Image 1 (spheres, rainbow, N blue to C red):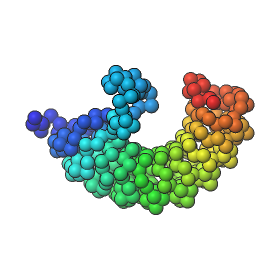
Image 2: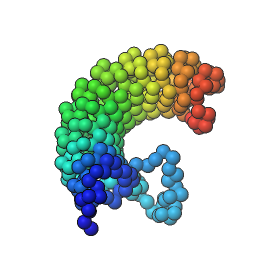
Image 3: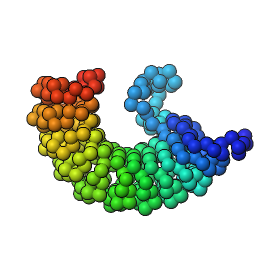
Image 4: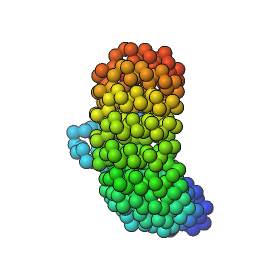
Length: 310
C-alpha cells in the first residue's frame, strides 16, 4: 500500500511501542514520508506492571510449551536491522527522542548519531549487540543529550567516559546489566557529569562502595539511584549517599545484603524527600530501619514501602 506523502509530512511524533512485527520495509516506507519527525518511539519491552502469566495462558495455553527465548522474544523486535536505522538517520535529521528498546538485531547506532545531532533522549535498553562504536558515535555527535538508556549493551569504561565528555548536558544514565563497567570507569564518568540526577547501576556486578561513595560526593543533585544486585555495596555507600544527596527521592538496594540498620536510619534522617525505598532481601535490616523511614520520610509511598519489605 502506498503512503500518501501529504498525510505524514508534518508529523512530529510516532509511538508504536511493543509492535514487534514491524520490519525494515515498514520503517523505511514510513520515515521517507516524515522529514519533520522529532520523536520516534518503537521500543519493545515488558512493562513492570504487566501480568505475564495470564497473557501466556490465554495466548499460548500456559508456560509448558514455551522456551525462555520465545518468552523473551515477545518483548523484542528481531526484524528491524541496521538497514532500518540507516533509513531513519537519512530521512529524519530533526529527531530529538528515540526509543529502540529490545531491537536485538541492530549492531550499530552510528548512522543515526551522525545524522541526528539534535537528539536529547536515547533509549537502547536491551540492544545487546551494540558495542563501543555506538557510544563513541553518540559522544561525538549528540552534544544535547540529557537522557540515555544503555541497559545490557556491551560497553567498556572507555566509551562511557567519552559519553560523559561529549554530552555535558547529561542528567540520566541507565546502565543496568552492563557487566563490563568497573569502579574506575564510573569514577571517571561522574567526574565529568557532576549534574547527574539519576543513575542506574543495577546488576553491574563489579560496582562496590568505591564507585557509590564517589557518586555521592560528586553528584549532589541526585534524585534517583538504582543499586539492585550490586552485591559488594555495604552500609558505607548508603551513609555516603545520605550525606551527599539531600534531594534523593528514590533508592533501590534490592539484594544488597550488606546494608545495615544504621545506614538506613541515617538515610531516613538526611533524605526527607524519599518517596521510594526498595530494601527487598536486605537481610540485615530490622524494624528500626522501617520505623525511622516512617518517622522521617512523609512522602514515602505506603504501598511500595510495604511491598519492598523483606
